[in-house]
Image (cartoon, rainbow, N blue to C red; front, side, top):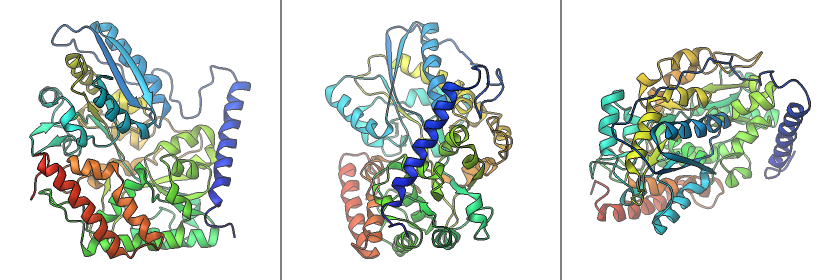
Length: 472
């Protein structure tokens, strides 16, 4: 059998080969007017809406965004933002960088006192609250125009201790399970796992009988964070309670950590300790993983590059555990305006324009992005019932499990808010580190939970002393 720590290098080569062949075929064959796989008919996108700003705007507006996992979004967004600027008299520039580098970039710009006027990140940015403009006025106007914001988004951008919106969160993405149907049919679960117990039993059988592992990370990256939180919540544990007191040390959390070790031993290899945000996507697309916890971006990529794999990828809601069925949002679109921003009026007016066009945001991201204001995307459920980006031979209804996403999705601070302490814990990857130590055999579950609980207590106490976290 292939050693546990070397198998994935082969799958990455297969992924690169497949995508390279797809690019070569695009360059060398076919006419340019033939639609790419997964492209809807021309003219089917929602129309751009425009409302005149409430005041005269001018000057520069510099935007910094992560490079979207669905490239069609960025191809649409950049001209969308610049065209708005041309209409209102603002010179808009847009920069994209890798998502993993944004927190350090924010720290650098804040330290220098100059940089971008608006910055978008895909997780809570609560730890930067002292360094950013309040979005309270923007939130008042947005709620007046677009209705009440989803609680999921509100708790990811509002600090109840300071009564301040440190960020603006108009959109988000669910975090379903992505599974290979043909593999799970072989273990009598054609509809994929619905519980953590089924994941362990079925995933273990697939690994032992079909030599295909599972892809749940135990490293310092976003998907490992999401896996850790979903597992702990489903077992009844949490980092904090609703009043922002640390509650990680519990029998429930210890049981979840033990489960993570059992799952690693039964169905994974050591590569998950060095996971990057792209690792599970690449592994799923290359056919080397049976299940990942992620958004729909890997499947969208496979539709264009490896359609046979794409047709075999399906989705399940959050897995049910002994106490709950919950997952964190995969992405939370937190927009912040650093205090050095010299054009706050234009920044807020642009965000209102962006929110008014959330239907386009969802559509141009190929349904990766979901609205924080539901009324702005009235066709979302229709699109999920019949995917407008489906490819020939694929099931156009496979996104239907995402219609219930609000029932099983929650914010990173559940059952409390995503406060600055939660933001720091997320950014320093304490939870996947806690699971990884046990999976490696370095600590027993209780020891690892005790250590992480102490680390969380120190972080909460630091932010509580600054008046930015509640509890006692």
